[in-house]
Image (cartoon, rainbow, N blue to C red; front, side):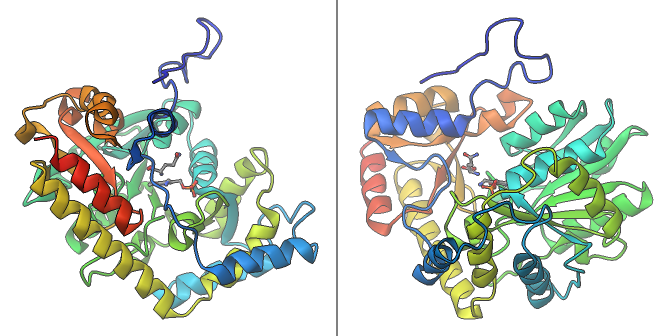
Length: 394
Ligand code: PMP
Ligand code: GLN
């Protein structure tokens, strides 16, 4: 496993210490060892054939092969606005309130680069997705983690702790629901507390909702932007990667009120300017798929979650309830292990499986040490084989 470090004194202070992303490291380890990759979150089957064909058609018809418009092709911006209306009753002007980005990753980067002044504090739910920390750092911001803690079988937000973390220097709350890596879906009370706090302290809210269609057990995703007082202060981030199982296409988006959208666009135009031309047309078609598509995706992923969660439990892990996303988080202490890093490094040799140590998503590495994340967005036979291998651990 490589922990590539840039040469001493070359990489600037803001990025020093971030090393190689854990996803690249762990996927490389899987490739090297031939282990089953339940690390990096990507499906091992592509999305709908008709969506793939739509991309081929766009490419052949010469749509998007040259620079598309900076904010994204109109067809896609209209489709994104229609999607927010259809699922959440949120209305957005496709011209002034929708921006297409190079995946959610660029949306996160552009948003933080646009909105933060050096020294501004950003409150992020911990464990946090790795790019949040790097982008806050690149923008010169200060990360203030508020930790989700094991509670009633899952990981929950302590809203008093969140409130206590706000200072006069807090600029924005960076939220992620459904949450990677815990699988937590923030409930109405948690979301309301976030919204009330944002209004009371006049904070911006950036909410990463890329797993919006992967919420299980009859619960529906609730976008923060739909809560009272939030429409004007919220930047919502989405992505086609998870919803349509084409993570390599890197089509993401931002929806926000015009003044916020304009700010994000100012930064985005100097990052990639534009990307994914033909894929934008295909995603526009995908967003209009019937409800049955979204239901089938959710149901398929729910069954996979159940399979892997039950298998991990049988193999001796403590398994936290995953209410959404591609992921289930476990505690390895029942296996007599305490260090998730060491455990994940050894796992390919011990069991032929790759997983992600949640500690990388914590400032307080000790707090995250015993937690390990497994991805269930894989074929049933692959999950079954992984479970078989993991069961042999004990
Ligand atoms: N946010 C979260 C929470 C994610 O898990 C991911 C990656 N899967 C992203 C953002 C990045 O999404 P994209 O691939 O669209 O850049
Ligand atoms: N979001 C994916 C995960 O959490 C990884 C994406 C990436 O490699 N940056 O596994």
